[in-house]
Image (cartoon, rainbow, N blue to C red; front, top):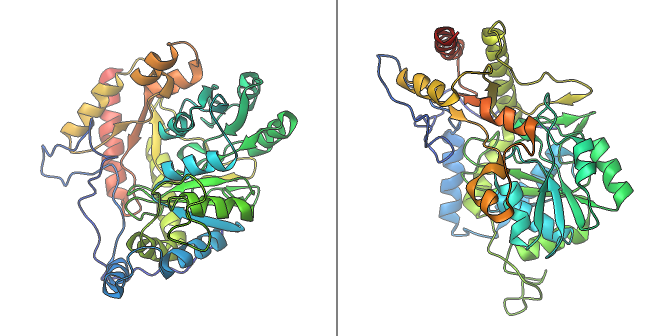
Length: 406
């Protein structure tokens, strides 16, 4: 992936609270000793972001200005994608991408049950139905054979998720799509920086969607980006994110149904600065992941994230481990919280959420790999500024707790 030079100066003021919706809920940090609490995530923000935001505020142009165009162009260049459209969130991007590949009422979209719920919800926005297929037990991505078995005459699209930043098996998924005449939308919301065979995730030509929430590799607070090859698709997404306005922005000419999915200039300014230090950020995340691998390598029964292989390179988003079978995951989260360490169950199986159970009659046992992984998975504190002492503290407390349970 192309990237910029690091811009963070030694005197950059960093955000220290690390609190946001993704980190709230079960596993909130409780300080019970003299050591500093370790949050689940923490954005890296500095003086350059402050200056960029102030400059936009002083300009008086807070929406649909030059920051938007620049952010889109720089993002597309960084990935090697032909085009990009900035939107208000990854969810908004997934919604617009499904509309752009013409998913409609009555259609089916084959996707993973092991993901953030938005990747399934967006099909419902168009009165289509998400059809789940089980995951690979190693990569945790959609299993191509299971996806193929889930295709019916109603299937319109495949929506693979590059879970936890590890590239989905796109060659197999693209072969399935070509064979069945299906569209593809890639959920790359967790995968900025990931590579597959020397090609950046998001640069294969399929519409691919990235998210910029506060715990992501690049943050604009909220926000997202859709990359694509097709010029007509970009024109459609640009219009639909802006209430369906015509390309010439005629105020009275709304020639299609649209939404308020714009990304404001303040967010775009943040994104431009963050993009400029993306290589540094990704390297910092990879460094922390390596520290975790070393610290947790000998814990019996603990499954670590899969290693890069077959030309695939993870864009590190979170560090999720699977606890040994028989270990109480929720008790583990509580035990770490008591020691000032935030962790979180990551991720719940979508098909077993109450809404999906009630709406579609899903039940336990449908997707056994997903259900096993989901029941044992826990996200540990993970952000670029974590030091060796932080990682060792987390690892020591986790090892100690698991040792008491053995």
